[in-house]
Length: 141
Image (tube, rainbow, N blue to C red; front, side, top):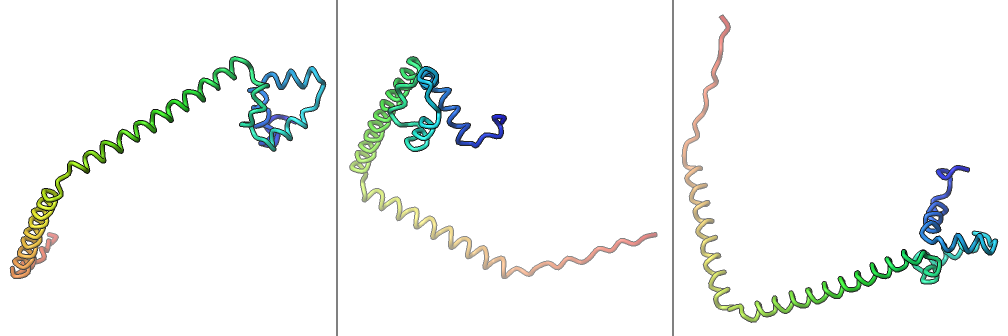
């Protein structure tokens, strides 16, 4: 049976085994079957801590470092979020509500003026007589 005809879960398990070389050694040395490992993989998943023992030493170190970096990045992003929140709260405390209300009042007045201009323009446009276009006829000679 070729590898392209394998069930997708079996192909995924083969990839998982390639990432855990000590698992291959375990099966070969103990002359064990793959079935129990496959069943454990299906039930427990790839992220189960028991699989760490079967990883290559360098690969396990690299993954541990990656996990540590991810935790550090998460901690930094949380601190950044807290800083951002504190800055927003500081800005909100400095906000002068009376000035803001004044700006909103002026903006509202400007919008009312624009609304009146549009109304006047539409009224003038309706009062103007519309020009009717006369059709142009071209004759063949």
